[in-house]
Image 1 (cartoon, rainbow, N blue to C red):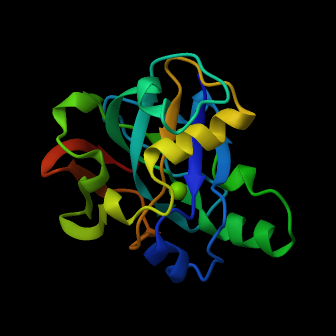
Image 2 (cartoon, rainbow, N blue to C red):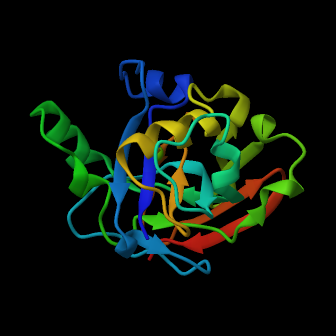
Image 3 (cartoon, helix red, strand yellow):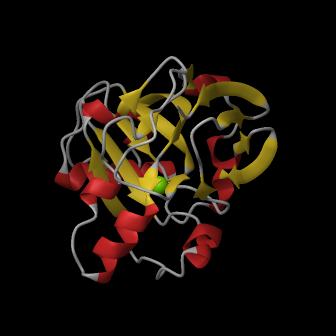
Length: 203
Ligand code: MG
């Protein structure tokens, strides 16, 4: 499986990092070795002093597809969860400044903890989903899918131009504002529509 991620999909987060607003989705990948499931703890990597949390809605792909239209996109994902796109911000900034790919700052081992997944039919409006992240009990991030620049169907359509989607692939859909550093010992709890579905430690 592969993990496809969308960057810069919430205007408030683009502002906080002083990035340009994209005219098309910014896409990057994480390998399967990035995945952490079952609320296992996430080891703090040796190569960064500034690992940031980015809480995101994650879609689970259930059908093989290529060049999917926006209209057909809903047939290709069946479940929704939450994930944290951990980012070594110091490495990313250094690489971005040099105009180099920032893969190592995003795709490293254990950089993608994800929750369990829920059938999308359980949600009445996918374009109005609330999600929140608390670190050590303090609210750090709040998002609502109505504020995405590129909604789910547009994302699925866009990425499937370049990458065949396969059952079991995951799609991270971008983070809202409020990203900040974590440290060993921090406890991260994430809620989707007020239901806590992610709860893990950084070790
Ligand atoms: Mg992200």
